[in-house]
View 1 (tube, rainbow, N blue to C red):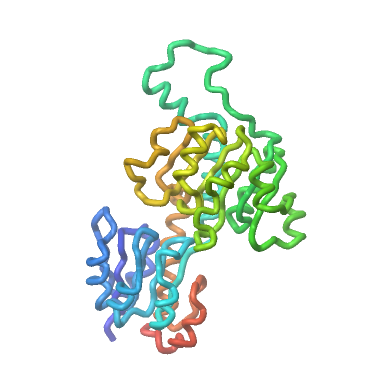
View 2: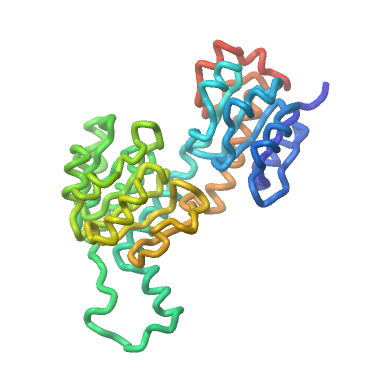
Length: 337
């Protein structure tokens, strides 16, 4: 029996390839750049499985180009880059890799909180540009205290909860908003208060965003919301770029509605050269690297490969996005191994 054919849209850690190769005929995009849509359509045309990344738009056309496709496995916690509804209609299983990047992302969120509070990126540029002419001055690079302040978390899922746990060491007052309130027992264990989005924005010294990107969260943080924040407050986003209105944020920074911001994600990635945030000193910017640890990336690749192999074995994958697909194409009909 011929092995299933799988296309991997970028080189991935060996941990993932080691899972795939014993079972599948694997084709990998060796280029540093993601495949173009035309390339993706071409490569998917004779494949049984696809392993993709957030940078790959697996839309209706791509899915239609692969009549043999049984599974699209994404190395990501988000899946808004995949037309899940269309995949379900076509009997294509969609899987993802939640959980494994929780600690890495929570750690990085805290790196950004500290960086924006203490103006680390500004100070680094100041030293490297040889602008440091006075050894010490009482008003030089005044930042913000973190210990004992109020942390507002928007979205108390896995990552938001992990960020809250880390805040305990700073003896912070914790408050959160989520469309779905957490169980009372969890709130007590974390030591966090549930309140409205408006109250989080008005009271928090640091606001950190951890909701998924959905139509209802597009520009969840816009001009009106930024106006609610304290002039001494900082905004941090490690979720998805379009959740924050970047033009409104740039205005908020320039006009000093808030003290600073730190972002790992953007509406368009890589960031466009005309993005006004690039030219603001008190904004810390990172190239979507919150999950960039060896441990998390290796685990994501392995789990994505295991999800894909499970479907091709006729087994329910651990992390299935579209459970309804099983009524369209039962696992017994997806089985190839």
